[in-house]
Amino acid sequence: MDHLKQSCYELSLPVTEKCNPISRDIDRAHSKQMVQILKQCDAEIFEKKINHDPFYQRLHSSPVIQTMVDVAKGVEMMLRDPEESLIVLSGCGTSGRIAFLLVKSFNEMLNAQRQKQICSYIIAGGDRALLTSQEAPEDDPVLGARMLDKVCAGKKYVLFIGISCGMSAPFVAGQLDFCLNHLDVFTPVLLGFNPVHMARSELIQDCSFHFKDVAERMTAEQRHKRAFVLNPVLGAEAISGSSRMKGGSATKIILETVLLAGYEASFRDKIMTPECMSAWITASEMVYETTYSHSDELAALIQKAGESLQMKAHVYYLGWQTLGIIGMTDASECIPTYGADFGDIRGFINNGFSEMKNKEGDLSSLGPEFIIGHKDFVDTILPSLSQNDMILFLFTVNDDLHEVTMLANQLRQRTFNLHAIAHDLEKFTIPERVCNMFETVLNITWPFSSEKDNSLVTRQHWELSTKLCLNAISTGAHVLKGKVYMNYMIDLRVTNSKLYRRAINILQRFTGCSKTECESALLRAIYSTDDLAEDMTSADVRKHTDVANRRERVVPTALVMIQCSCIYAEAQRHLDCYSVIRDAVNACLNSIKSTVD
Ligand code: F6P
Image 1 (cartoon, protein in one colour):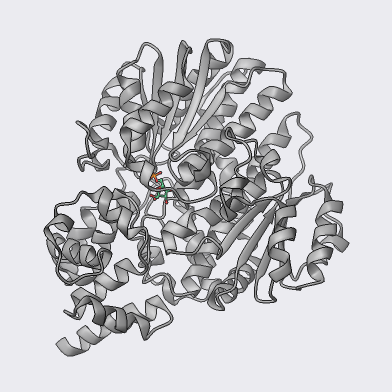
Image 2: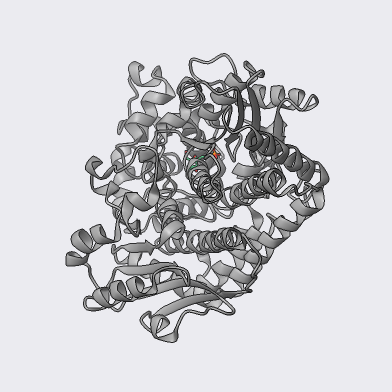
């Protein structure tokens, strides 16, 4: 594909789907280089300008900060009238999981102050989506609206925050549309990371509007302060489209800031100023810097995790409290992003569901994916644990270090492939004997402040730091496993309409063929056929993604079929010759290049 065609193609994509030039060669990087690449990509979250797009609003831009102040005022109003009010955070995939985490922490803080817990979360697919990938409900705007209506029953005032990093999820569009139709009760906020004109404009099935329509209506209402759009641009993701990374981190930073600011205004009479919003963001930037200053340990952890995945072994995160949630969030997203198996990277939390305190309670009867307690890990995984499996403890000095030591001791009887990310404070460090139990310890010592309520902010910083590390570890490990080509998730699972479009985009990107040709190859790969029957071509995207959900290597198969002009069986044979997807894709793209040369 010539450069001109390629850059026109890139230009047509929203920022959140673009290829980041910084990480273009991440697939050829070793672990230390990967850390530097990810560090540079994450730095863009806080940059005031990105060279090639100086016009977009950034996290530090005044209009964004001002909108944060406005939304925080909304939080304050809800807190001042707790009987009649509700704050709802909603999203799909990682966006919904971050919503859950924030709501849980905020409600716990309110509870500790003997205040009513007025925050609620919605995640597409319900609580099972907190732990496993459930992409199909993301496509359903009616379901989104229905769930919102149910949660808000009887409330007079609702501040609704719909999170869609790519400004694309129909589930969230349905909810925002519902709010816009009931502005007497709802104040809707859209949080995403594209300019409004780049919001998704593809028609939503069985629906009269698309995401962009809703985003434009929101912008119009913002003039009257009846709705708000918070959409700073963060630059493209390190792995194209992987909004769990920068998108998820920025979601956490922004919403924690507005929730806390609203809280302080309501209960401490603090005045909300743009300066205090900026200061909170700057504090998160310090977290980013401190975390990446441990790049050697981070690289070592990436290397270990990569080796485990390369050997078809596993990576297990054993986290305490909210770090356990950060671990499960990171693990669950590897399935759609890298076509990973649920067992490849898994998260566990101390005390399982009683620590999670999710709405639907204990889900362990739903199957092995829902076994999440440390005790469950000991009972079900430990007996068959191998030396090749990597175990990563996630804890802080505030956790029960006796429990940490006991569990580590128990595991060390079976394996020494034991590592840790451990946070402590200048005045309260984790004893050396605890750190010595682990082969690699990424130990971050944070400044201590005795200010009241600082413990929540400290905890939030530890969560962010752990998120950055785990995103780097799981991304790096999958890169080392060969699941990434350049910086594209070449083996993604095509399980909803966004991922279906992304798959076509990837095929177009590498083959230079038209959208129609690429879609046809994708469908042939999905239906495992060379002759698409009428009922296949006429079926809707929902049907395609339903079938694709049960197929392996869909995008690589389609790519080989196009590049080598071969039939389905031949493409499968080509892929079977390689144990690593990237090698198979590489060989296929290079063979065509050399024939042309
Ligand atoms: O469809 C799956 C997914 O891409 C997840 O990876 C992501 O966390 C989720 O959708 C939500 O995306 P967005 O926040 O852009 O709506």
